[in-house]
Length: 396
Ligand SMILES: Nc1nc2c(c(=O)[nH]1)N[C@H]1C(S)=C(S)[C@@H](COP(=O)(O)O)O[C@H]1N2
Ligand SMILES: [Mo]
Image (tube, rainbow, N blue to C red):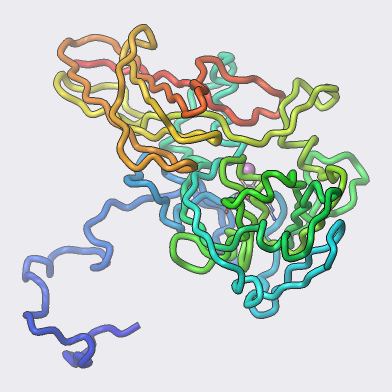
């Protein structure tokens, strides 16, 4: 990168207008390019070498729709796998196909590209609210804890293009996507052998044009923590389907028995529940970000209530806001665009004229008619909390 040094300005940086900076800036601290933005602090976990291995997103402090990549949450169940150089990477497509394929990075990028903007939510996001709703735990602070929820623009090639090139048959019904990270889950039965993270995507979702093999995020090649060189991206479905560090696509006739299917990311009452349900599409959900969830007092007057709303099943059609704990609801303004997989920002102008106690809530509805629920869908794994949360506020 070229910077101005010792008063020598290379020709390509020269412009006709004056260069320099207002003298007042000399007193200001901070990095020039970033100043004077508010410092955003994701919750982070480091490995022994001081490298970031886990990130939680400060959603309460975000503006706009795209989560900057360094604030985008990360989840991986096993240790972060070794870095694979892009030019050494290979993807094997095998199993129930006419031609088994091995693609390198260049060959993958010869397929026509596609960019998808989507919210990504981990099934474990907001899990502590299940205890809170049962009066078994304190109220979680999304501000303090940050969230396992983000949104990005992902660029890659449709998985369908690669599958079609390998030749599918009537018997090609699932795509088992395998990552390069290996381990044994902490809760696995004794004697469980180490395995690579994998998920078995049904062919219908695999062939959807928005399901992509992504190699870039927010305008840059993927970072290692997000699954470089190439990851699967399954918009609308819970984050755990978007397998990172892809090595293999195994096409199968039967649903493959992936450990994370019915041992971890499922709905049920217990591990032995005979009616366990695989978690796929994410719920319809909204959160209030302003006032943030650590605020309990406000002054009389006009306040903007703001937040995000999203759904895995379709665009958001409606957001309603209540300040009286759900007795009466008011239509919030939804800020464009309303993209199919993205969250929307919404706002509601609240004229808090009278002192007293209030309880702020938001309720999202999506285009297929799903309405955010008051009661959580309880399940023993505490997955996919999406219920309406109330925020008590005293106006003084
Ligand atoms: N290979 C691999 N892919 C994975 C996981 C994993 O443990 N290993 N975790 C999944 C889960 S649970 C989530 S929520 C998303 C998170 O993607 P991100 O870290 O890029 O945000 O990745 C998914 N893909
Ligand atoms: Mo997740």
